[in-house]
Image 1 (cartoon, rainbow, N blue to C red):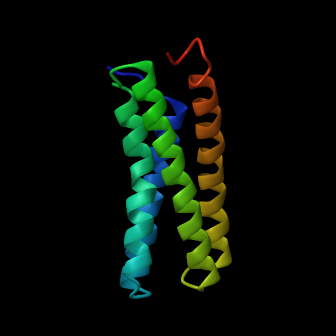
Image 2: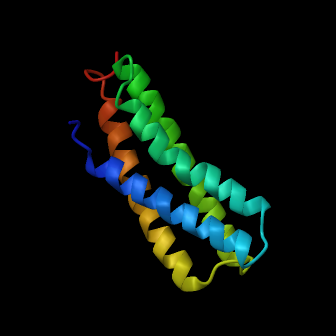
Image 3: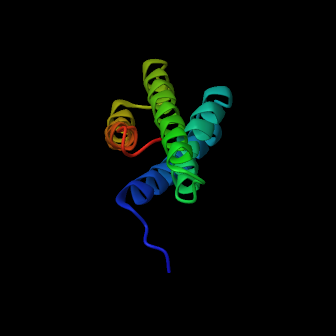
Length: 121
């Protein structure tokens, strides 16, 4: 049985929340363009983290985690835009944004550690 990291757990739970947000946006707000964008980027974070688990090399791991970080940053953009265009309320924004910022911070730390010279060759 494989051990699941805190980052994997948080990104998976965040993806579930993004799926719920997307359902809300599409069913209640009839918003389909931004909802697909936030769904794509928000679920990609965890998928990339999971993919990095079986990276072929340290460099491959670093690349996948860097892309996960970029997806998290993009998700933060879409969440902010959804709030500013009043598709989601302040409470939903604060909750999603808090989780997204936590993932960004964890990924920044992971990427920095992974990119240390003795780690990535």
